[in-house]
Length: 230
Image 1 (cartoon, rainbow, N blue to C red):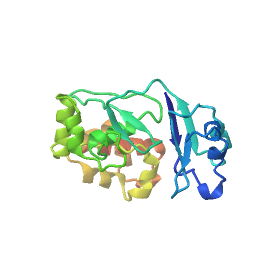
Image 2: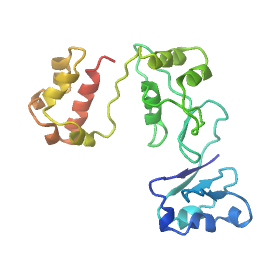
Image 3: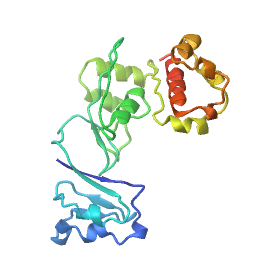
Image 4: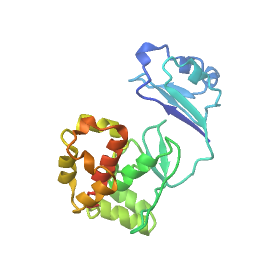
């Protein structure tokens, strides 16, 4: 299976000559492998017509294209798709009560997308990125079982999910004040002393968040997440 990804932020049609389209061999042979959007000028790539030559990648002056050869894509169970040439996620991990479920994998495999869906921050669109996503459609697409029951409770607000920020280096820009004040504010479980001592940050409670190192920010974020009643 071949996957084409357009880096939307990198693609700048006004600052290039559409080299991806102009040099594409299938396009030169009359096939609509790459079609330029009439409004934005950005390319839409047909993965079924793409031959994987890599010419568009090399010709793009803004490093906006990625073409990857992957194991064959599943034909069913698509959970979310960001755009025509955007990332696609198939299936979701199933959280189990009183058990730890770990997800391991390289960057870009969909771990964050899966967590956002399970936490209710993202309503999956089942692959139709143009339609408004709907929880009922997602739930009805799943077989009866733990995952379906879990998402029903997420939709109805009966499950609270706490997610630790991935990029903790941005926290000092978003949260001001002292470490202790922040953690006391989010302590919904009465475990302030136990967790701050257990994570070795009890000596940082009077320190300003902006003064923390990267490792200290990680431990503070872990404590803040674990203190939530989730």
